[in-house]
Length: 150
Image 1 (cartoon, rainbow, N blue to C red):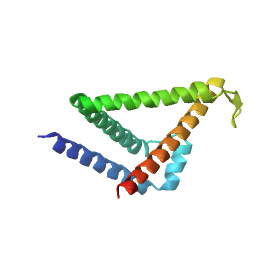
Image 2 (image 1 turned 180 degrees about the horizontal axis):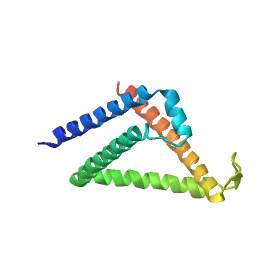
Image 3 (image 1 turned 90 degrees about the vertical axis):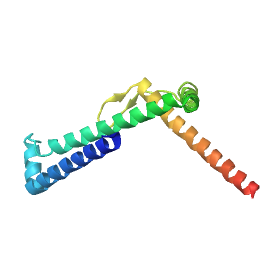
Image 4 (image 1 turned 90 degrees about the horizontal axis):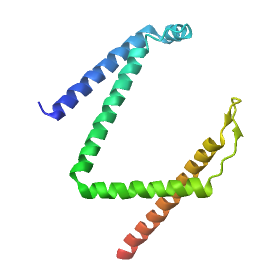
């Protein structure tokens, strides 16, 4: 039995389990589920959630397996991937150490966001802005290059 058949069978079984749990949830009704959940009984929804978690876990495992297998078998791809990860890390370090500043910030729920947490949030925002600008510039140059070639 090849891997494709195994994956199709597992996907079919998980889909069937999801449909069965969905029918069980629908047959109980919204009010009964809400009343049970208010009392702490989530047994009618838990199997559906567990099916979703198992499906997500299987998908993540399969994706990571094939990505890592592809990277190991193609060294040129591995080199490009490592260069891109390094460039991303350099951009993050620039955003964190040069642009972001951390300030303790009160949050809505009364908690305090620490200075380090605030600096991480700021660095993430600056990194997002950098990536937007880089993508826009690359799209403009790519479009201009195509227009010039015509």
